[in-house]
Length: 99
Image 1 (tube, rainbow, N blue to C red):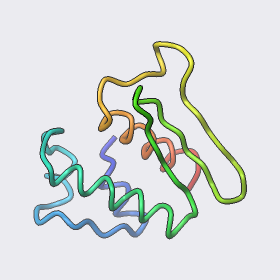
Image 2: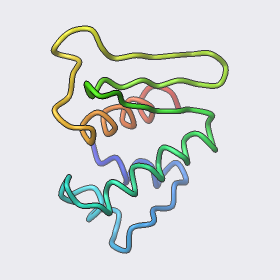
Image 3: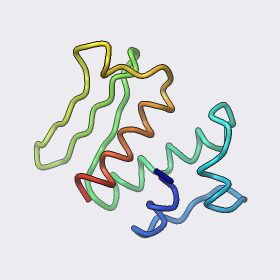
Image 4: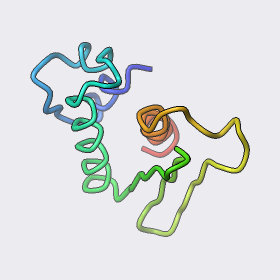
């Protein structure tokens, strides 16, 4: 899924100097991507009251102000190798299942 392209359709305006397509293909170690992910998390919170967090085991947690909490953890299949993978998966889940 091209996460940033989908976010743009929902009204998110990216901060990265390049195009949305470049942002979707950017190297996972690029600090611009890390900054952009944090901007997305804040945008989701401000616009939809959705908060995403990732713990030290790279489990992801999605919660809404109204008390809904979705957690992904418990067995090896639910873990991710990097924080970027966990955040991306959580953002994709929000785009497909919540908003």
